[in-house]
Image 1 (cartoon, helix red, strand yellow):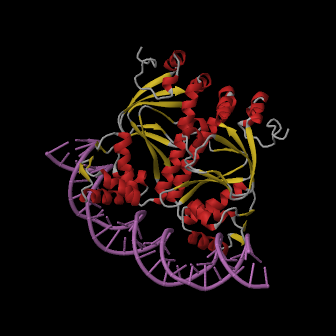
Image 2 (cartoon, rainbow over the protein chains, first blue to last red):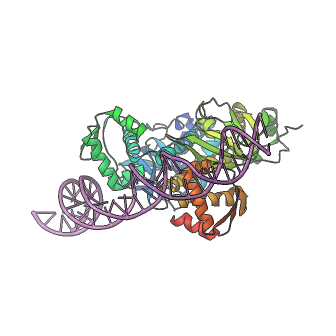
Image 3 (tube, rainbow over the protein chains, first blue to last red):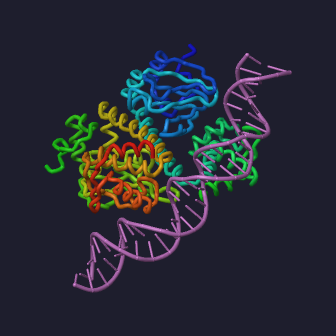
Length: 225
Length: 225
DNA sequence: TATGCAATGTGATGCATATCACAAAATAAT
DNA sequence: ATTATTTTGTGATATGCATCACATTGCATA
């Protein structure tokens, strides 16, 4: 059985808490889908009836601000997507878009709720997840608003390196316009700062590939602007 | 019995889902405290072992940013405080401070967890709460970073009027320096903008009392800067 | 009532960065 | 291969706002 959640290799910490019966429930009530880079996973303003599990790939969560789109965070697999927007309200309050090829599973909300009711450990993990996210979003916001753009750009590069790709060399999954949305600045500033970093020997760029040459400098810039 | 949670008049939506046995558990395991304006409720960096219930009063959640303190949100009773910071990590990731006289109950984390395990409805409400908060914090952050200060200041006044005090006339519970932390600007700008609003006949200030004279203008400023 | 400290008002200056306006390059579509 | 379209680079200009530097007012404590 292709859809067997029991044998799925991509489980979140919460999902690994589930017993076999819950996993079978999931198996029987989910829809697997392969997505291409750029495909929309959740669209702000539309109705939401499913929790989505990002099995593989990388996605961006973004929200329409008063003037620009803002990328709230990058999420890589495995992870649940859209819990806040699905539980909190009937219509999606933000968008999620694949920034790489990805595989997702659509899980019916009712099934998900049932699993919550029947698995304390799962629920604990989930709540813990929510809590971490909320605190994280507070911190992120404080940084965004208070740091200069150079600092935020350094943070973004470090985040890609440390949390997303776990390597000093990686291919930027976003265009400069998208980076601007992530860092809260203009496309032009991203271009300038990236060149600046390269000129200072902090990074090396080959097309969209970035190699971090001097992580210490990045950390300093992150701290001091 | 003074501490009887059964008869407590200040219940959140989640708490009102609890059965009598859970409420009695709460009664036996909480500590009530009266606080004065300015008193610290949760302090960033210290250990957290309690969930806190804000029974009456108004509090600010604030976090140390890279340069300034940032007020993340205002919370009025009844509401739980510090769930994210208590569940997510052993040490508090943000601070909470009373901005009016207040009453709080300290609830042992273990007891709170037990209540979660035993009350599905309570847990659902709680999760719903988390979800709404997360989405709200995304939106707030997008506004903060994208709007001009006039717009953010208008938002703050509208928030006080609509959500906190539910009146067009209210006494500002924050100093201008604190308002600056809430709106992400400098103390001086707050002063200037407040005078500007008064000069334009949008608000009337008598000491720290604000009367909104022209809500439509505020909404326009909120939208267009 | 006097004295001190905290909270506010207000001008002058400087700077980070958005915006505009293109040119150039890279990708995608035909 | 040739357009068409999207991405990127780069200068010039404008502006919102922080910062500094005080003056002033309000409030608390002796």
